Image (cartoon, rainbow, N blue to C red; front, side, top):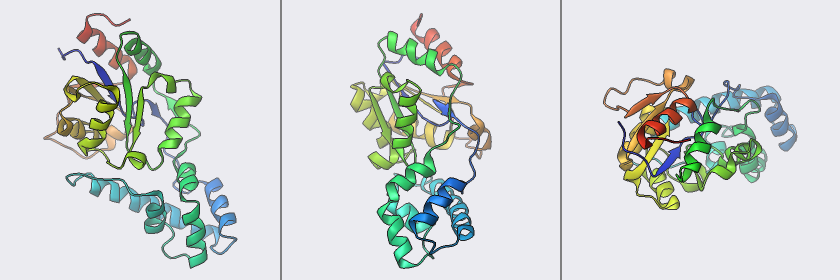
Amino acid sequence: MLRSPRALLLDFGGVLADAPPQPPAPPELVRRLSQLVGGAVADQQIAADLTEGARRYSAWRDGAGRTADPVELSHSRVWAEFVTGSWPGPARDAVDREATPLSYAWTWRADWAVRPGIPEALRAATAAGLPLAVVSNTLCGAAHRDFLAAVGLAGSFAAQFYSDEAGPRKPNPRLALLAADAVGVPIDRCWFVGDTLGRDVEGARRAGAGAAILMRSPRTDREPPHPAVVPDARIEDGHGLLALLRQARGSVD
């Protein structure tokens, strides 16, 4: 049985919320970019560069995750290095000036949905006096914040830490340590709940979390093997998290 936690640190995607994959070049974002650059880049080229940029940024994230202390790129660098490199100078400058709102638009998913059992698990943890924090890698944490507010969950969290705002990217242990400090609980008394072995469980281990919980999501099933990274428990959704809490604390209602 796991040691009872004094706080929960939770990933966003795959834990709090999930959504079907979105095309890397959403038509509304292509239109927005086309208007922003005044037609200097053809819509077809914008869509192609967004698609290729998403692939390259994903590859960069995977590579960064294998380094000792990965840090997030700024919004401006993501657009400049992965999307607009071949565009005319004025078009690149126009995107750079709007890099943050464009990153929000590229991050936002209209079909994000709260994962099953998460509201019940959060309510039970709060009732039991456990402070909660979000710890998430993302291009734009503001989109995550707004989603949690829209579905009525933002008030459950004492703190939210996103890689684009804080700097470190999981598995850099600093992101989890910042969250633990913010909720005033030693990291070895925190449970960390994520949906990846290489980023979440590995990051929790590096930080010294009291327990590393793997919640299965579609991303979990797509992840390459990490035979040396073993979670303390595996669960399917928020209902599984609530069951673990009840087991560890004797009774969480």
